[in-house]
Image 1: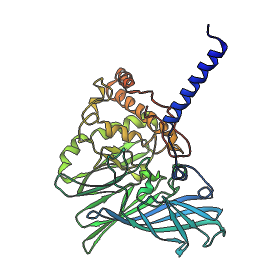
Image 2: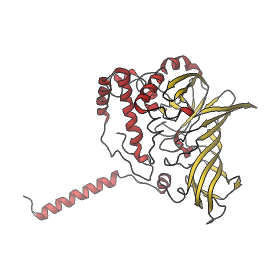
Image 3: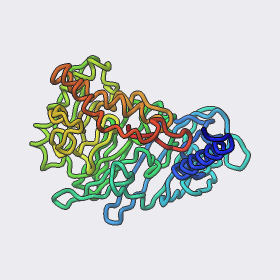
Length: 412
């Protein structure tokens, strides 16, 4: 038996070793992380009601210019934090159309909403407009590494979009970039592009025009939406349309793909109706009937952009042609179509207030893959698929991330 002194010495050594290991693995957070991930005094006194975005991308120099108007309700406050990530630059800020002073530092704007320091804006409804421009962060490996996407299709033509979950929507437009505050009255996104290109976005297309070689498209979202879900897709798109008779009546379904992929899309996207029927049976009505359901071919693998799912799975079953479960079940359906559409219920309709609870979005949506397997192939297939996924569990870190610093937990 060890003596008490030797036991205490051993315990001290083990504690020091454990603390050193924790110190080495603990992430380091900056002030910018806290400003991005927390609700502070410059965020809590105002509530976003509506976003109205106007955007012009420039493919040749990989820049964007835009104008974002935020309708908000005020409980009375002084300074507003508006998120806008460098190297984008704010040119002017207007409250109800009148210029107000602001300071741009790091990835935020501090706006004196009442026009001067310490003055307080009263209660009621107001609009704040930010005019901005610059070269946004460009995604290196979307959708995992976020940012603006300037790509070309296989014919060498411009193909642009955004993937910004985690990194945040403020990588391309000014907003309150926090998952707890969705615009209660939805959003509008107006995109101007060179004639010949098509801009697709969330919701429904309400207006198009062409003048002097520039085409403009306005899309309206009638439901609340996460800031990272609101995105444009710009390319040589064509579409076909369908209708699904669901639990709330007729749901408009539209499918937007690059012009040379129409025949592949018509064959692959037949899975959408069986998905909608399965998920409505299990989870209730599709949450966004007013905005329709869309699949949009994207220059990256995929993302759950509300009512405009990003699809880049090469019109093939599985996940880039392979079955993540290793059982053969996942090869019977298109992973991106099914998984990202499952997010319409978990992630888009039911959203976590902090990205630390990303598991709310991802775990339930992973379960919808098993539900679809059961709907398609029977109960045993659903169970087999779930069991097959177990090998992917790494048990590497807590499922829940750290609150208040925009940090998700384990991918498990």
